[in-house]
Image (cartoon, rainbow, N blue to C red; front, side, top):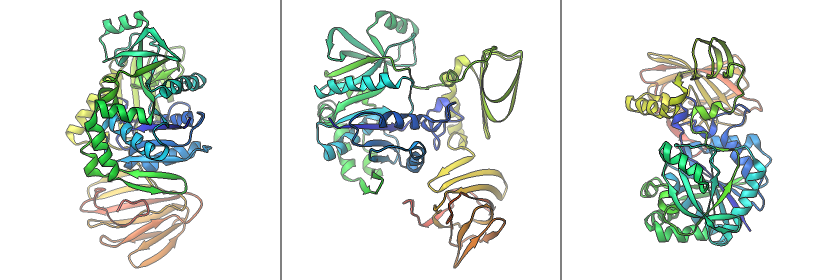
Length: 478
């Protein structure tokens, strides 16, 4: 049977600030082994049998970054496809739009495996076996979820109550979904033995999920079909891409697939499994991925500790010293540092809310910002000036653009630059430079086979990123 893994990459992960931010969200966070969560999800999906393509539903601003992350792990024979949202509309919209497109391409009997991009699964062989069991149930017309055997009374997860009295082939019938419980209820669920953590992973036939959505959430499906009808589709050599229309997609109800369908349907089954699963939902969870030293400290980076124990420190760019502190989470980035007690890591999201309310952009992006052509890093800024380090990938190009309020001075540090500066085209080698006046059309391109690195010095009355008038762009951003 045809299987299409659908990787859903939409969450910001505000509890993992200051590393997770809107332009560099949780799925792209590097873990201690060097890979990030979206790469691990992609590898896991590619290892499955009967995969005819791997689909990713994500924000359109993260498309090129997602492609780069997949390219780094490589070696995947299956075709790739993308559904690009103009903004997040929750999981019901993402699942429904994927199902609508897959039905059109593969028919109603094709099976889709929904995988959040920001979860960690340690036991790959058990995962493969659980998917095989889920496919059997899905072929019988069930909406299948993966229930994780609870290891402890967790209050931060939703639960699934299963019917042990009526076992199915490879799984159990689901009696009900349970919202995040209090401590006493969670303890009772673990003792009962028929409650499982809700993993947020699903498997179903495309026709089944669409029929069930029509029955239980017709409003969601109607607006999704309208958004699909107005979407723009492109087919390249390496992937297929569906770009959703902003206006019609805004009409889709903002609701989770659990609330829209799974809690309402009477054809829900679960595959109980032990996968070494974690949603990596807090810094406490991240800390468990690092081995503890004899004092219980878990450290990434250069850390000195004196009379300090049971701390987690992530500080890879400078020395961090601890003196007489215990049970802390310390996460250091170039422009923000988090210090939290281990028992309060779920509350980090409230700091992000304050940053948004205050208009502080440190919730939104890092000093290094990713673009389709490479990256830029803000090194220093002040009144009327800003200094950036720009890295352009080989054969990549910035848009042909113009600024109303700033001039720019480009100095090549490494590589070769092809520059359009108003009516002049020139090649710049290492240590050469050019000056671009405000109002001049200009473009920067890397014609070489190694990264182009240059320093950009901006000066002017206004230096915001929105002072860019794009005239031509190979990445469709005009």
